[in-house]
Every structure is written in structure tokens, then in C-alpha cells.
Length: 130
Ligand code: THU
Image (cartoon, rainbow, N blue to C red; front, top):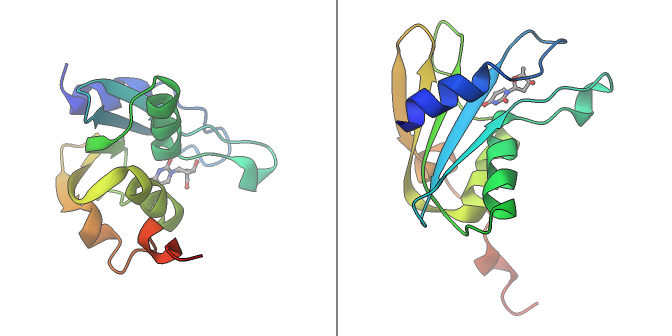
């Protein structure tokens, strides 16, 4: 199954009763496995989690260590870029040249690298010498 098909299928399981905006994310890890996540909202709104965060958590829980490729899908007039927090979360486990494909259920796609999505990222290198 392609990352796009996987993201589309996990999106259907999203829990988004407050925004009604379901999002699915599929990660291919550097180990070659696929990990899925969907947004899971909460009545205490800030406690909700994004699809990308769920997929990253699944990847780490499965024992994989890095992101090779990501696809995110939503039902939107235009491709939905990851929020700022998720850009930083992706950067934690992805090199700058890793491709993030943003897709819509209406058939549009937009691909950008992690470095394009998060220029000037705060990285582990900044912590050296502390
Ligand atoms: N959302 C994601 O899961 N990923 C994105 O890339 C953008 C937004 C979710 C968060 C919230 O549950 C809903 O979409 C509306 O913002």
C-alpha cells in the first residue's frame, strides 16, 4: 500500500468531533516500515494531538528511529501544511531533505522538504557544550 493510501485510510479513523477536520498521516521510516497516525481531539481543546504527532509516536513505539518520507492528507480546498509544532516534531527524526507530501482527498498534492517547511530549525546541535 502506498503512503497516500495508508494516510487516506487512517484519516477515516480520526477523532475530530470539535473541528470536524479529519487528518491522516503516514510515515515511512528509514527502517522501511510504515507508521500511521490521525488527529485525536479532546474536549479540552489544547490537549488534542495532530496526525503527524500520532504517526511519530507510533514509529518510536515500534522501535524505528528515523523518518524517510511522510504523507499527510485532509479534506481541504488546498494541501494542508503541518502546524509549527509538528514541523519541529518532524525535524527531530528527519533530515532536512526528507519529503513531506501534503495531499487532499480532492486529489491535490504539494511536496516540500522538511528544511523548506522549517528553515532555521532549532536542532540538537545547538545544545552542544551545555
Ligand atoms: N491537524 C493535524 O492533525 N495535522 C495538520 O497538519 C494540521 C491540523 C489537526 C489538528 C486539529 O485536530 C484539526 O486538524 C484542526 O486544526
